[in-house]
Image (cartoon, rainbow, N blue to C red; front, side, top):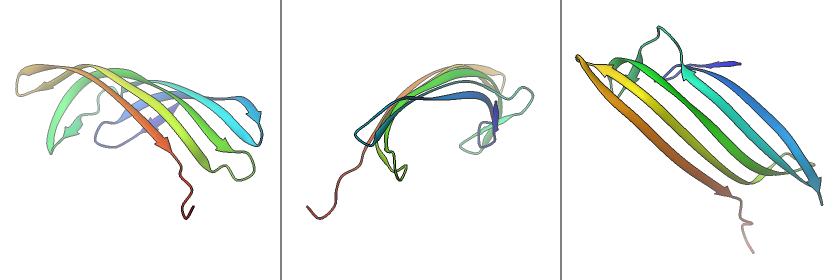
Length: 107
């Protein structure tokens, strides 16, 4: 379990699993479930608010076995919940996909 403090302080449980290693490349899967830290306000574009948020992140990564250098990654973040600001309840539903691919420079 990890406490991550930023604009939205969260409590997260993160798991990394080495799926396999082939030809010097490790395949890693990650998953995390999180909630915003109870009782701690969040900050969005300079506005302080209370929130009830939860979500998860999943990812698949490939890294070189000898150096640990990341050669590709795909991850998906999903957040749902409610933000409370100025006597209003604002529903939140966010989904973000991210891809990273290393390229060899100079060839």
